[in-house]
Length: 357
Image 1 (tube, rainbow, N blue to C red):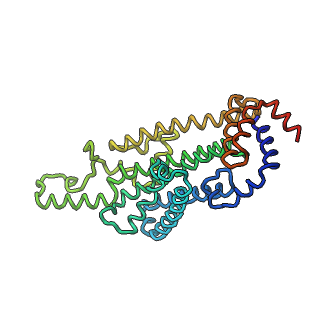
Image 2 (image 1 turned 90 degrees about the vertical axis):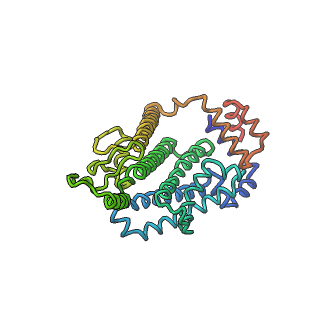
Image 3 (image 1 turned 180 degrees about the vertical axis):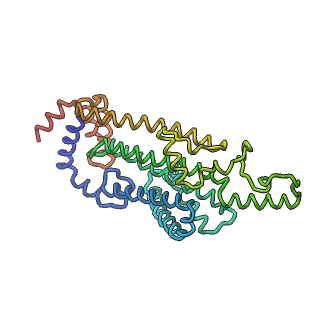
């Protein structure tokens, strides 16, 4: 049914609205930010996804020694380049938004802003706000932009005149969501639990303990471990032994996250702190959700391969037609009156109308 609607609208648009289509294609910059069906928009989305992936890899690399020290300049260059690109994207979305105030205070608008703000604060050298741990946690929020791209991809499926392959599109959206969950969960686990026994934290804790021992000497029969700093959970107060300090970097936490999401459960890494266990619980729930989505995609793929298009839900045809007509009106390809007429036409009437061309 959708095919016949598209054919009818394409025929009529070629005869009556060629001038409107040509005028619409003139503004390339506007189409980048407002037209999900344009090639310019798809290229821009690909660039955004590329910089998100590269910046997340750099973020993870900053937590791995000795690479963090050796390649510090490279990581900074990647960060600045990514932030510059994200800034252009944010300003473009803000400028071409129908309601700029609403976009500015929307969830995705705030995500876009938070993804670039920490770097600018560090460039300005605001020492009062220059908590590197806080900034890096905020930086990872940029990965949520991948979910925004997934939402836009869903809009493309509903409004695009041609969809190349819905199954591949769904798989792409699934892996985008999977990457987002892995990156966010791993980063949070590293900063919530792994940060307690980072080299900086151990050094500061040992220095503080040495000062306390200097002020109040230990008894002569005190064990050697008493003079060595032991990190503890700030909530429960439970100590974190040296042989159970697993989350020493974001890549290490990513391994734990992948094992958890796939329900493999090797048991080689597990959280000891209250905050770490909360993150682990949420990650497990997301793993169940993502696994269910994947099964749904695979199931639909098998059904389409076995039975073709005959299993398509007929009830979805009116919604699809309505989405197409709405897109046509927004792009000024047809008038609202003509869209209303086509919406009321039956499949038989549309086929008869096509025969008249």
